[in-house]
Length: 178
Image 1 (cartoon, rainbow, N blue to C red):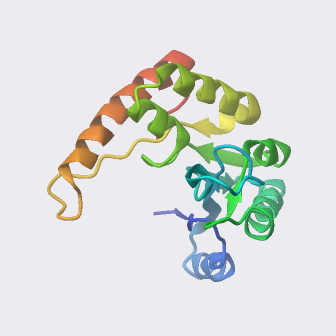
Image 2 (cartoon, rainbow, N blue to C red):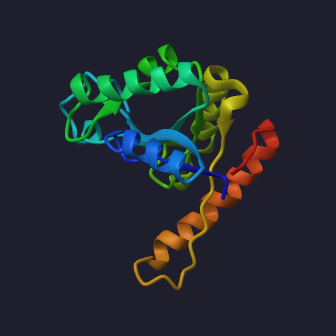
């Protein structure tokens, strides 16, 4: 490997040590975070839907992106915290410069919408992310072997279906799939 990323959930507590370790090992450090995006607003703290948020991976592609990532994660922990540190789409749009975004695991907004059969909304979400991030948007797929003891068969089956749809949407919207 020539590069390595760190994307802890909701925090960046290990970034400094990670960065130093990568430099010692002559690896390019990719600084990021798997964020929680509130389904409504990060100010909402009433319903079950406000307790977490959709996963979204953010990676800094330059110094501006790093500063924006730090700002987002700081606000998520100081102002958006409700069970977990949360941001929302308004804040994400405000601090999007210099960031690369991937649509995350089955816990991401787009995979969740696909999994629920809400394809129109999944496509609307893709359009929103593309408008905000342009060419720095990547659709993400995962394929874990079903033989892994911790992997439930139903989760594996859902992942297969979501992957197929993401590949189709990637072609339809000319968005790279990683």
